[in-house]
Length: 422
Ligand code: SF4
Image (cartoon, rainbow, N blue to C red; front, side):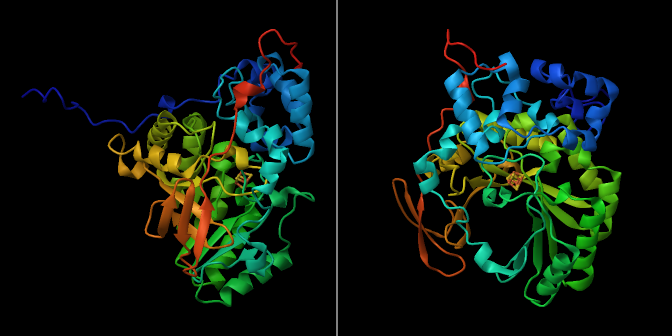
């Protein structure tokens, strides 16, 4: 008997990684800079990627060159913004940028915008709006919720996101907890048996040496009685080759581990990133996605639908989409809360519920995290949202207004202007 015409006659293959975009071939600016490293194979070595991070605006503009023409005044403004804050991006992440695309989603995440320095951007946020430093029970251990602890191991990330909620940590050089501090941190968690859930974060814990990460997860498993051991890491996105056998071998003894990674746009879900997610899954790590809703990056219905579909293809559940936090210097990237809710609603009926994230708001003042339209919402008048803190019951008002962000396209020189790029 013939097979039903609408059914496949043989079992379907799993989604092919080839169906996702790759960093290769490199776009023209990256080919000029790093084509030799691709040819030699160094491109696929995480050590090479770390050693060749781009760490200043001047170097970034030099690399982009004529592909990203900026007028001299804008170049000076970008460099001024970069001088006021750390800059870092791995070659493999920067190679995802398309500088001639007016809605390029990569550059706004790594290139400091002059808006970061504007007084209203600074004034409308705080360096530590969630009072993490006040809630430390040992160096690096934040105990906000009774049942969980955040363990901040390092302030280093190979790629520094402009929207980072812990930008305050970038100042003063990159470091990690010493052995004695790690031991004290684990002891502080063990001494509070109510803590059942530990999130290792930073900075990015997977940028640390595997022996170091392995030591931490083993100590937590051996000395603390935990239901859940989680990692927050953007390494699968910005340095996927770091998810190698050595790192996986360090993590495997602590399985099951849960890892929330941070894809913000479908362009980031490359074949290399998806392969890193698969390697993690094969080692017993359950991987989900926590993105951030960012103006000019992923704030259209099409952007979010494409991201959700790409996450499914990579085997990732879309867990949270965070409202951009009220951190000093990131105001311009914030999407209004009402618009954020409309964007999430636009996914209904178009993609599986597994790929529809919850829009979440971290309440200022350490009030805890809530779903933007969930049961803790008490009042909503225009841009004014009032929530009850899940920790204290206290009413907390959230500024749900939109930031202002002109986007990568606005950085480019107007037609006829002298290009200031190299
Ligand atoms: S990867 Fe996470 S911790 Fe690191 S800079 Fe980006 S948002 Fe901040």
